[in-house]
Image 1: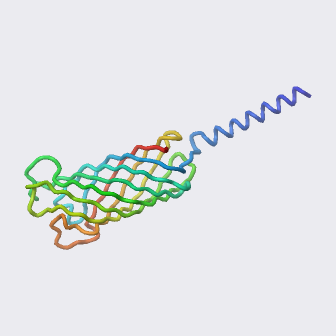
Image 2: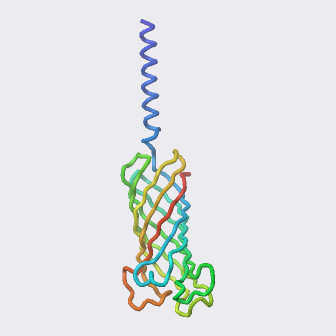
Image 3: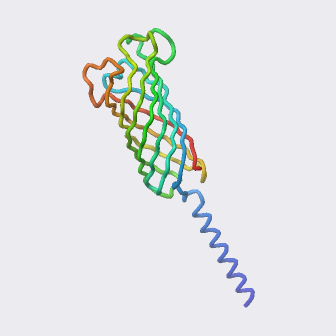
Length: 200
């Protein structure tokens, strides 16, 4: 009788241990809580802007908070560097236009508690365009707003670290920094980033 009781206790403990491994193993993870992301990638412009601005470097730093497995709120810095096309007045090496901005966004995830989670995002931001002196008389320093929308895919490397791939499109409120004759919603910016981050 004692032997049977011991066997029952051992089997029960083993089952609980297996359940715990399943909950914290390769499939089940928690996405809730504060997080940070550092990203590097590329960006370019569309519409009338695309003919004069070459794709260039893009970078981003984000701090966010997920109150649930689905929903996230984040704020961050977004920057980029682009060269003017050789026929648009660029005669010196290096980036001709530097972009620095701040944005806030809302993210909505799919497949909660999974190590691999797709998500969508939308937000609003403000940015400053700085044009190198002597590059072209047709481009000017300017400040304007934008609305980013995009899709992403995040992957939990472990319970603390994650990696993300994010693609977004930003509709610009104005394009006064560039010689645009007819502003259109299609005159915007596309961006692709690879990001590393974690929870804290």
